Image 1 (cartoon, rainbow, N blue to C red):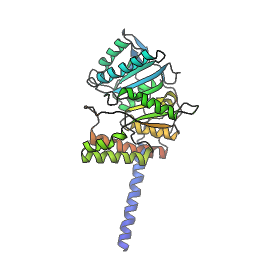
Image 2: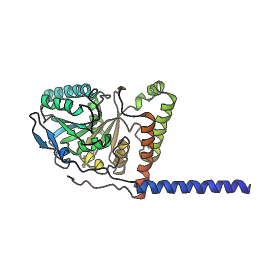
Image 3: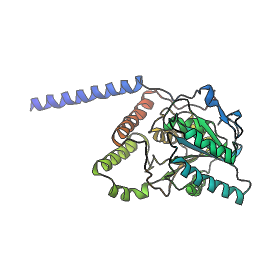
Length: 322
């Protein structure tokens, strides 16, 4: 019996030591999202080839809607998404001339012709409606969305994936969800597109291993970071300008798990969040490598909580940067 007690005590001590080591690693390796820009990233190109400076999220809004599209090597998938988005936005503007919008394509250091293809839309619709922000080097999806959001002019800011997996007209659903929760004078609200209603169908189509990874990820999200949101990873999220400024100003993660940190920050600030079911279709060509990407995201989820817990990361007040 004494031997068993000693083994249990040793295991507890080992677990405690392991936790302390992880805590120290999380704290020491903590970093902040890079808000600074290369000189070339401060400007967009007009239809005539002139360069103009991007505005700042800190400025008052001058458009009703900004659509931020992160794109990495998306020369094949992006045109389909942009065609659908532009058709919807132009139709909405024809029906309601007071509706104004902009689309910001953020080329996240692509090696293909993503920027060149996006600039064709600038030539077709003008730089007032379509702007291209080309990052000098790859930051990750979170970093690309961050840079695009900081350059936007919209009263509302929509994050939308370049693959067009979500039907673009479903923006009306997330707008309705946003209005339902945006009742305060501070105009703080977020609406998340959600695929949670499709979970049973996706489980039926996935392998047992991928299903295990999916449920494991959902558990880690719930346990460490975000409660009450079933799908944190859908790339179709709508922010009020004020909510975007508050959440993105504190963002640290620039890779796949950035959505979770954004929602964690929002819940810390008690920003209302709506989850809205959207139409979603799996599109081939995903940049997500199932095992390693999920492993990286799992690590990031644990580190999000630990780094805020130890004070390595702090919620920040919005500050204008160059």
